[in-house]
Image (tube, rainbow, N blue to C red; front, top):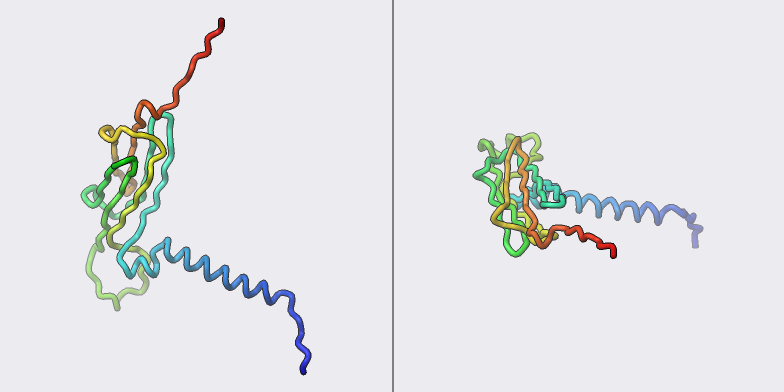
Length: 149
């Protein structure tokens, strides 16, 4: 039987390779580089923040027009749908690199408070969609006065 040299870092290298594969798979799915591009889907980046009176959603939608976007609120869930179309048709063999995704998308967000759906306001400017969703009166914080007796 031969002598085998023990390498204390061999297990770490294997672990690092597995972690790298995990991160690559996760990033590929989120960016739509492999599965998303093949399926024709993508997901725009979205920020959501809360003010005392409203909930604000900001979505990056470059290359879209307002007619390409659909916003709905139902049962405290905001749904953002749309489609980005390719500007011109080019045969796949002529591309040197394709990083922009085209096709339909749909994102749904559960809102953290009751809202006034009939007063939602959406503004689309420079490829950024700003949706302001007013909170219902019962969802707004109330200041309670303390009486001194």
